[in-house]
Length: 167
Image (cartoon, rainbow, N blue to C red; front, top):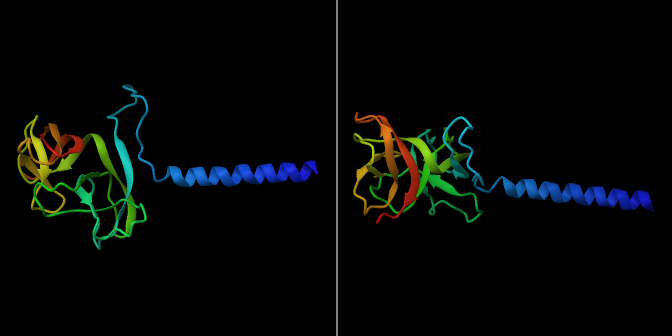
């Protein structure tokens, strides 16, 4: 009897741990404490799904792809050619291959692809070039605020990523 009870308990614990791990893979990776000596900027990332036929490249701005989503909680994203869109999800964290899972930065300092020059303190919004941002006014929905980067058009700017609706 004890052997059966032990076996049942072991299987129950195993089943529960597999369920917990499966659900954790869908959660955003948000640190509960800040570790300033961890060797780099603290980034909040979340898993996403790229349903498009093309790869989303690292540092590209992505939007929520409600039109393609099947309601399965996969956080579908795509690039956009709509300037100043309200659907900004974040910035691609590494390349996200077509029809594959990946991750996006939803908060933290990270390079962002831009079509215009950028200066520290400038707001970056979506642009008419797919995956790229450009400087915009504070009242526009935005990806974040530049903290540094290049004043050269077409280069990546270092941005504090924090998608918001503007002022």
